[in-house]
Length: 116
Image 1 (tube, rainbow, N blue to C red):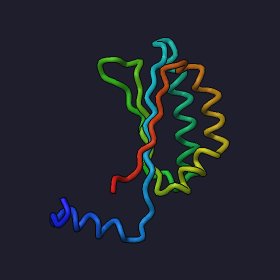
Image 2 (image 1 turned 120 degrees about the horizontal axis):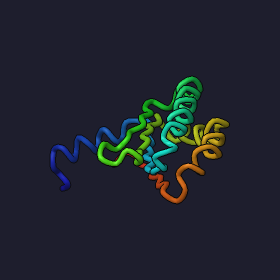
Image 3 (image 1 turned 180 degrees about the horizontal axis):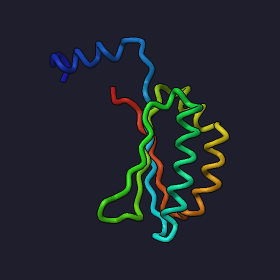
């Protein structure tokens, strides 16, 4: 791939002093009779996150069409520092205490970084 124009342009862009974005996906399911409780918890959490974390540039909660008890939460942070601040925040600690009992063993978190 060396010498390919797109590869060279990408490598050149990667040398620009830009922070690497961090994205996360959290996939999980809850019992059908707890979806309203989940909605309330996540609405409060999202408001706190948006008010207190300017480094979080994307936060989306997605519900699966054909399996309404399955969810994915997408988040994007401007850089590693913003992600670490997020993970150390009081509202994340509160969320864990509230939501993990709803998810049980279904939770799967993945951290993604820019591909260079």
